[in-house]
Image (cartoon, rainbow over all chains, first blue to last red; front, side):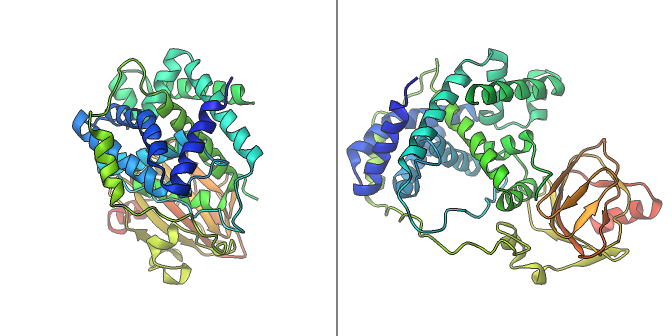
Length: 180
Length: 219
């Protein structure tokens, strides 16, 4: 198990935030832009639209780099939330209001230990998802990437709704177990 | 203390961004007052992050050859946003938190109530048509007409408390009702009960009058 990757991305993003480092940004772009594009294609965009929106997501990463908090999320998770919001706009889906933020109080540097633990857990989660039984992993992917509700997944796959719900439930139980 | 929370299905769908706006509003408003569900949402976002990390897979997706150059050119003309300033915490005792306040245009005093009978009042909030969000006012001790649901109904208590014969729901608690549940929420004596509710299908009332009134009242 390594936490090297998570910490590496967080460090590169910090360089973007602190001194608008385009070399660090290029490294983040090389890694994350194709992944965001793949996510948008799986959500139903054609290649040209996915390319354009993936660039938009990376521009947002640049602009909001200073708002990233490595003690609360991995870079991949933070980019996922930006890509998700871009997808909602792209597909003209329903508005998604967000709760008010909790991060008030005296401004502090993110706690180093919190950051390490968070990045370590993120790596374990990636491994745990890769190790899920295929049927469960596919259901989780569809729930996030397919832009489908459980009922729509049922229609598309022809599987009973109960089967889909139980596969997702089993997958979540495994993920919880592997993180506990 | 909050005892009725969001379920995994709602949190996952909110994280994935696939819920109707009215449900998003209820989920976000619950999270604003529930630290436990806020933490659980972060876990669901982390699943999304792990999936992004793994999303290249076999079908290798590549960016266009001059994609980075185009993006760098766009960045040159953009201004980075500053680190978020530490703001004063919103008062937690405020009955209506964000994002609900924005939908109402203020607090409880700004709600444009319409009577629906028996002292019960409601106000429909502006959301997409895929589901309906409304504020509900139930006078202390009063009942909402007995009803079932064709789809799913979420009810978040923001002031006071109600019991529906199965359970008790107080500030911050969320009731998740589906077609299997026929219930008659009754507000507890004391404070008037104020809730935010969302439905993805019209409610089915048992009595004749409420059913007739349904198309007119949009409940």
